[in-house]
Image 1 (cartoon, rainbow, N blue to C red):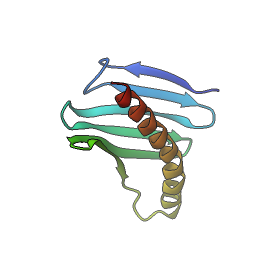
Image 2 (image 1 turned 135 degrees about the vertical axis):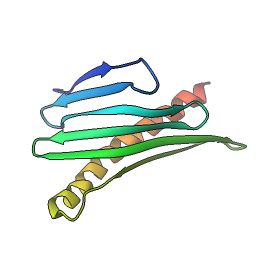
Image 3 (image 1 turned 30 degrees about the vertical axis):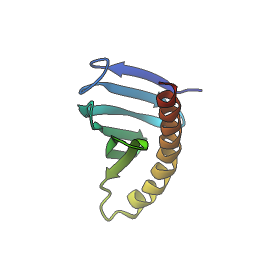
Image 4 (image 1 turned 90 degrees about the horizontal axis):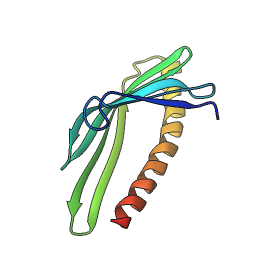
Length: 114
């Protein structure tokens, strides 16, 4: 309930940026770095949870096939050898996993309507 969203840059495509702040989830942003109508998008995700910060490179790739549309959503980041940072990846994976699942379900519903 304390989460606040704002947007910067163009309405869509490269440079579009989604920012948030929240008491529970910290603050952060996601910015589109590449956009291709035929292939998908790439983005940079920054999460700031007090003393823990993470930068993640992500992509949502898609391709048409005889069976429909194949969508692959992936995230990748570097944590080094720091034990605490490695442990944080488990939490981020859990948090982002729920968001990814929800986003893919919404995408499926949207595309099935058209």
